[in-house]
Structure formats: C-alpha cells, structure tokens
Amino acid sequence: MLKTGIYVDAENIRLCGGYGMRYDILVDLANLGRSLLLRANCYLAEDRARTKDDHEYRQKLYRYHDILRQCGFKIIKKYVQHFVDDEGILTTKANADMDLAIDALLQARNLDRVILLTGDGDFVRLVVALQNMGCRVEVIAFNNVSGQLKEVADSYLSGFLIPGLLPIQSSAGENWQRGVAVNYNPDRGFGFMRYYTMKPEGLAAETIFFHCSKSNVTNHALFLDPGSIFEFRIVINTDNNRTEAWDIRALDEPLP
Image 1: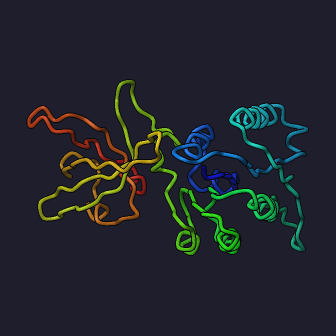
Image 2 (image 1 turned 180 degrees about the horizontal axis):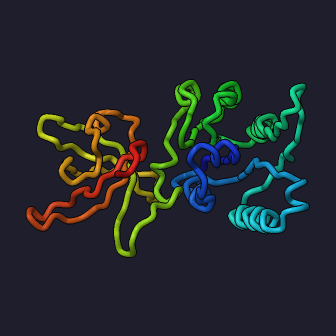
Image 3 (image 1 turned 180 degrees about the vertical axis):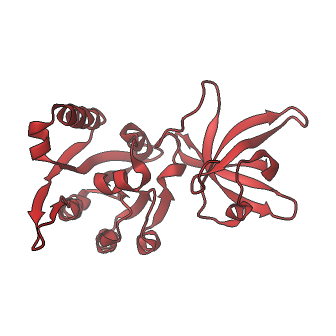
C-alpha cells in the first residue's frame, strides 16, 4: 500500500479558483487503488478580531472547520496579523507556508506519496526535498499555478478535472463534466474531449467526440490550447446514436 498524506494550502486554493472545493472528494481520491490515506492537513487563516466581533463570520468559519474535521482533516490555523506601514496603510498577513513545509517534511518519513494542494511557486523547494526523501509528490491546483511547480512535481492535475472536487451547477439528471480538448481539427471543427472518472483503481481518462457547432465557445482557438478547460454535457445524439459532448463552454472565456 502507498501511504499517502494530503497537505492543503487552503488560502491559496480559495483565492485561486478553488472556493467550494469538496474535501471529502480529496479523501476519496487519496484512498483509490493501492493508496491509504494516513495524514490529511489543512492550513487556513482566521481573523481573530473578526471572529470575536462578527457573529455571522464566526458561525460560517466554524461550520467550515467542522466539515473539514468530519472529512478527517486536521486543521492548522494561522491567525491574521494586521500591520500599519509607514504610510499609514493597513495590511494583513496570514501565511502558513512554513507550517505546511515543516509538517510535510517531518511526516514524510512515514509516507510514500504526498498530495499537495497549492499553486504557490514557493513550494518548489519543498517538493524537491520530499522527492529526495523518497516520496512521490502530486500537485493539484486550480488557477494561477506556478509553471515551475508543475514541472518539478511528479504529476500535476488541475483540480477542475477531478470529478466532483469542484461541483458543476447543473439541472437534475444532466451529466456534466470538465475536460480538455484533444485531437481538434480546426478545418473540420471537431475533436475529442478528455475527462476523468473516478474508479476504485484510480482516476481513469475517458474521451468523447465533440463538434464546435455544439459549443458556446466563440474563440475556437481555445480548442487548440492544452491548458484550456471546458465544461460540457454528455448526451446521446439521436441522429447517429453516438455519445457526444454538447453545450461546451470554456472556463477562461466569459459567458455571452
């Protein structure tokens, strides 16, 4: 069994497209196949002054903490500090990078695999150190991800592509997925979407046909960009009895 640890830089994930992420899906992901989750740490910020004075903020924050604990995560808080600079401008700081790095290095002695959720390039040195200790390091993030962090990790996967990690708003009974376009033929306007499903043995890549006429994407050049992520509905085309991707929309293109 691969002994696995999850380390979540919650503030980075929240501010970079991962707001509303499902932590229970992370746990499921870490336990797929021959993997066994041993450690699950979440590093987040709390504004103690606001917690004291704002009842609604306090209730929402502590409810969020309770959900994480129910999913099996240990919460490591970094309290927000307020500073007034020389020009009298109030700034805040709540950086848990050091806490995450130290914990991961100490706990990696008993781990084979580390799943790191952050897009912050400051963690490149940590990834290399964990790899030198014999751990496989997999990075998951959403937007604004350091290119160097992607390169140094043993694997990188956009959190948008992990089934259910960031739920898609849809009507009941509809099958919506997120994926990337592959083998797109711009002259004929068709290609395939690659998306993932979660199976007991791990994440499985699937492909499905699409035609640009069934999309809401105005800039078709996005279909040639391997970094562009699309949401689409899986339907059976009754004209040819083929399963296809319809109602395609690009996450990095504003809705009309």
